[in-house]
Length: 209
Length: 229
Image: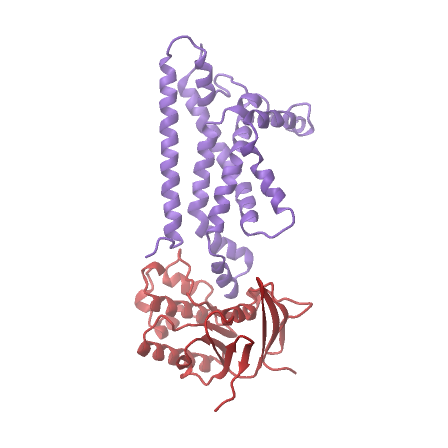
């Protein structure tokens, strides 16, 4: 049996061919690297949102993609939180959180500190508030795997550490593994993350100190 | 000349409304396919939809007459169902629908293309299947643009002339819409006061439609947060 995460794909993005290979049994994978390296694309491949990717993706013994199968995104049960949050602009915060909720919204709102914002529209939120709601929307869907793309980038440092600690605690309590993309290694402090550096050659495991 | 201004305005309204209503579902489906679809023959579909925009309306009317005339299978079948097309109000509606269809489809296509497809990606990743994602995310976000398409199609249908004259004729009280009434009055000697009324009505309706279109377009931009915060 292979590793929990097992991924080997190539993806042509215009003239550039991205080769991504990653195998790991860790609960939290921290992907660090400069912007533009393809970290966000890797998350989209795992989520099943890059139909052009060719190769193999499996998670927890389930094949999500290989030559013969492609499990569509809506059947993978991942919680993908894109970098800019992408809150549905036509829905209130409450409706965003409840959009695909399988767990009670108020508890998640409370944990992420957005209870006071529930009746607002996304356009009336700050960048940091948007990120928290986007995280909350993913958590409400009770995912099997969290894919977080720079989830704390719009927050200032103290708030950042606190939210990271909250998310880490939630993930441990619910036993949900995650892949966390960041350009700032300090974001990983709250997590017991296996570190992968994302360079020109794709992701590479960083030997633990 | 027997020519009732109120009847012409009423008929124009009926034709414009009916064309906008009948075209809504097909225009949305085709606009959607052109905005989001990747399929063989997309360019052909696009060209077919645009054809009435570049064909002389009189030619479109002639083609429609061939298609819907009693001698053709389609026209014969409709006639047998008690829905004759040539020289009827239905003919005027079909002419308005076909001639207005390109602008209808293009407006809706633009509205759907303006919706960042990553909203759909988020919905899918949350476990919502494609059909429900379209219904709950894409459609509501494109709604003001789709409404703008309805307004344009209605406005275009109000004033349709060339194709209408060929397939529906210029029959008082039945197919004589504003445009055809104006045309009929051009031959009348002297300045007919009814002409002034009809021109005024045309200008007012066109202006109202443009104002509505602009308001809906602004609403679409606000809805998609394209105007900043």
